[in-house]
Length: 352
Image (tube, rainbow, N blue to C red; front, side, top):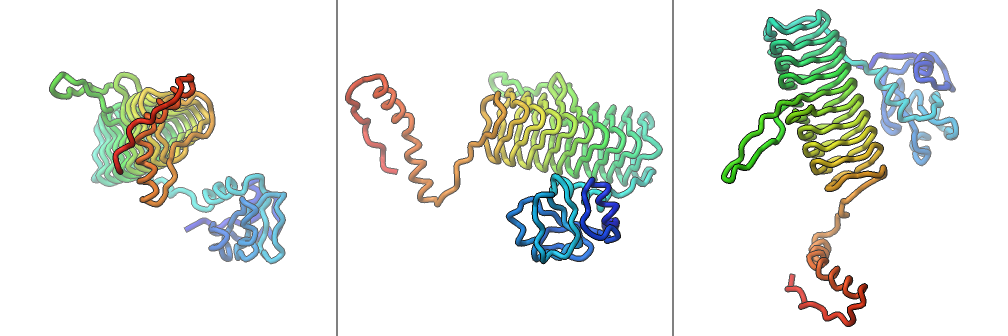
């Protein structure tokens, strides 16, 4: 349940200019279409002014240069970035549950571990030898924190998070259920008849304010560390290979696969289901569209995509048949460009 805030106090905390009654209570946030009495909404795109005209919210966040429809009866909070202000308002109205200091009787804490008195350790959690759990940390039920792990102040591990030995988790991080930090990287050597495992002796180091989504896995380094920079946001079901480095404030959407030893710069945006090959570099500020396959380094900031638009199956089949012959067409084109004279077409392709 959201904590009610008077509109005047909310405007002050958001740095907004209020047009309306400062005593109006706000207890929640909602969309323009779904908002009702006591709720706050936002208008970030002027194209949705028609929805605002019929909106029943008690207040709306909007830019100074956007005219408010006369039919909207609620208050206006004027801000530079309505969506950002909405995110901040939502956090104010929906604070994290308070930490409940103490250790559940069923938890197992090694005598050589250090757990701050203000930390909360849930049922059946395991904390290994030499682990250091900081102030106001929450270790959810069923979590496993390995030996020598460091968890910074204010970090929260949701139920069933696993952190392998020696890894470092920064301050005020959030790790969601099923996340695995520090499993072995995919290090193998072929001996001529079978694969031999290469011990992975590096760590995973997470900076401060890192979010790790549900069932996301971050492999430990083979020799050096896998490093996730400050403020990085990782969605659900992401795979990050060994020795990767992800720069600060980069955001990675769900189901992305990043192969080992790839270095991604700061403030990048990686779209969902993208696949990034190993030993590459992606320069800071790059944006990768969803479903894109990155097979070589990105050296110039920009927006990159390689998704083929969907189409009816019969049309796709015809196009795919033509793609099979691109190499032959390219060879003939090169001959033409070099003045080779008359080109004799190759034998027609087999019927598709």
